[in-house]
Amino acid sequence: MMENIAIKVENITKDFRIYQEKTDSLPDFFHSVLQRRDYQLLRVLDDISFEVQKGQVVGIIGRNGAGKTTLLRILAKIIRPTSGKVYTNGRISALLRLGIGFNPNLNAKDNIVIYGMILGLSKSEITKKVPEVLEYSELEKFASTPIRHFSSGMSARLAFATAMTVDPDILIVDETLAVGDVKFGQKSFKTFSTMKDKNKTIIFVSHNLSQVKQICDSAIFLHEGKIGAMGDPAEVIKQYMEIVGEKEPIMKATQNVTSNPNHNIFVEGSVFLKNPATIPNRLRWRTKALFDDNSFAFKNKSVLDLDCRDGRFMYAAIMTGAKFVQGIGNDKGLLELCRSNLESYGIDASQYAILNGNTVSILRSLKPHSFETILCFDLFKSLDINNLLKEITRLDPSFLVIDSDVNRPFRSKLNADNKGAISPVSKDEMISLNKKTIGNLLNKYNFDFKFLDWQDMGVVNWTGLEDYHKGNRASILATKKNHVSNNL
Image (cartoon, rainbow, N blue to C red; front, side):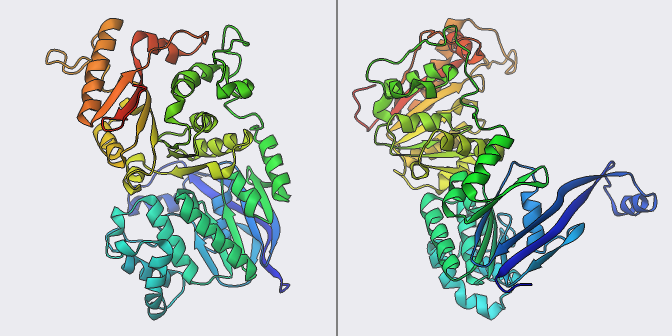
């Protein structure tokens, strides 16, 4: 193999067996083997070939299920291909899954030692590097804390920092950095640049297309187990968007749902009048009601979106003048779409960040005053609403913008006769019940608030709007009682 090649992949194919019956015990397993249990072959990778030069940063993109993680596991020699060959030149360090190699009951120092030994260092070598790892991951204060108390972002930082101590020739990363905060993300990519300068090779999977375009020398688009495109990142991303049908993102796909497509609800001076075509008609009334009419809660503010979904409200917050928006979600498919949408609308990557993980866990990892405004969509559907509001209160934001279906836990009349079953109520009773129950809850956590009432703005064909008028949804602008505002 040529000296300047770090990885060479020749015609690899990977099949997995999908069995038709589940075996729950060892005897059943041996019985199924002897009986030659029926299975189907699932081809995850199909005749993949490529080369990676030393010193290159290569991004692998593609939809969920395209075979990206399987390819990385083969490159890291964790699994073998069904056919084909893989050549690697140098020491490999792989971050393929958050938490692998960590024992949740052990503290950070012990886990660094164990993980370092898994990566190939001796116990004495990694023990000497523990202070260095803690400093890089910015977790010195938590050195003796069990990992089970770490947020997903803290665990990612610890894993990445430990992997860097191995001084690998080839670093393989599978979305691990997606859960880190902005500051650590910047540090990680600075490390990538340093590795590249040392002629090290980096292979990483990312759904953040902006990242791939900014830092990669080359990109590979996997589509249904095959290479859909390979080469210049900008060109590969363009082909990816065309092939998977996301050239026009979901936010644009909601057009033509108003009775009058030219209907404009924004008043003179609205930031959304600069380019009204970017606001889907179905979203326009909510954008006006929640953002444009309450621009003081967003302009020059740092904003946290607790359920970023496809990015529509992150986009609206940025359009309203937010200086930075961070979104939270736990659906990888939606997060991929969120990133693609924000990029498609020309939002600079420095204006936002997206975290993947449990909402309450991420909130617990944030410092008070990190965000001035918090978007709380579907807040009152949460079964853990008290813990959620408790963590929100600890962050001490200036504003909460709430837009939520309130059928859980407020839609039912809870009484001894029906044992909590839904009891029919009139619209006025529903609104009164909402205001009483939601109001008591917000008062408990020291928030002043007002209910936002909207007129029908010409938007049709969406049950959410009907729910507003029936009292099954609530929109609220809330502020801490110690925060002075003339807008409530």
